[in-house]
Amino acid sequence: MTDFNAFSDIVSTLAGPRASGLKVDNGQVSFVLDVAAMDAQQRDELDARLRTELQQAGAQSVRIVMTAERIAPRLIAVASGKGGVGKSTLSTNLAVAMALAGRSVGLVDADIYGPSQPRLMGAEDSKPEAEGNKLFPVKGAGGVPFLSMGQLAKPGQAIAWRGPMAGNALSQLVDAHWGNVRDIVVDMPPGTGDIQLSMIQKHKPMGAVIISTPQDLALMDAARAIGFFDTAKVPIIGLVENMAGYLCPHCGEMSDPFGSGGAEAAAAELGIPFLGRIPLDIAIRKASDAGTPPALGEGPIASAYGAIARQVIEWLDDPKAPPA
Image (cartoon, rainbow, N blue to C red; front, top):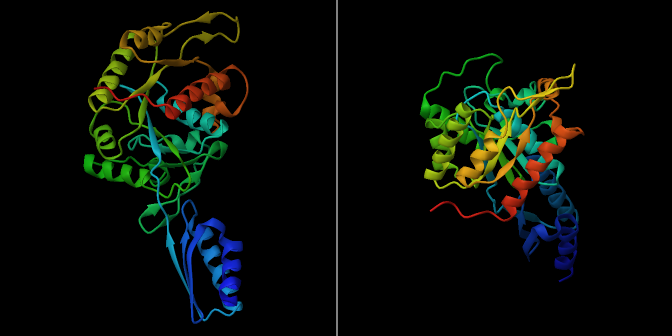
């Protein structure tokens, strides 16, 4: 009994509640170790310490059964019906703002053919490591872990893949070693084609954020994206209006090159929440090119992204039912 108590004290001290089912039989020690949310290095280090100290205490052999109850992260799709409306920039800043709000969040660049997140996240030279056939995300701006096809392809390389190959690549990014990440923002490709359909069918997002510029043409495409998610029974979290107003740095006059208020009016007409608007500001472009998301800073732009993130978080904590 003394040996059991000594071994139990060692296991409890090193592993705490992660260890269970301790058995001791003629110097043979065995137990179950929960390694959920631990990476490979952490698992190996804990395993080595347990074995060393148990053997020093007299254990003839040590058998550790590692287990982990994996909770799949929730996916938040950021989508648009067309390119060039700022979807990737919104995805970056949404993930960063959610992290600043205390959420355990990651980011997947699902735009297989035009990945931009390595630049936006300030980690163009970082490459993900792999264990078996699973990738480990790279830490980007704000400490947000992310994965992108841009990390796997050579700089400037065109990715000329057909639908099934692109779908498999997307699955590899989503089904990675995300550790304790609870929510993943997914920067979707523009449009409603094959990649989007694969994403919806295989990795059912919890909800979708739609982004549009204010003009009618962009709103028509955004409405198509909303219809696409409605058909797939993925709830719409809300609509964001990007490039909403331009403040001239020289004369101080506000102008609306893409119109004004169109997305908010469209959201009301479609019966979905309007999450807010982001201005057309050169500071966003400069910060994004430099890999320092504006959401990390201060001022009205950071506040706008923060307000959108808070609404997304509130929705995640109290999700609405998908459309019938």
